[in-house]
Length: 85
Image (cartoon, rainbow, N blue to C red):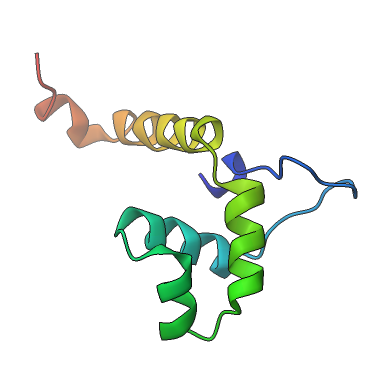
């Protein structure tokens, strides 16, 4: 699902964020800690996390990642036992 997060303003082709930085931003935003707090409790630089957050985390990319996760869950064999109808 991390492939859904594409840089909005990359001057270089095929620019990708480091997986750890992207996960730190996703976790920081999802847990309401924010990137500043995530940088203070990890070895991640605030400038890097801000750049990743500003360039990669958007409603469009988050929605696409959520769709990818939901599709993967729907393919699991156990899924048919837990559907809500």
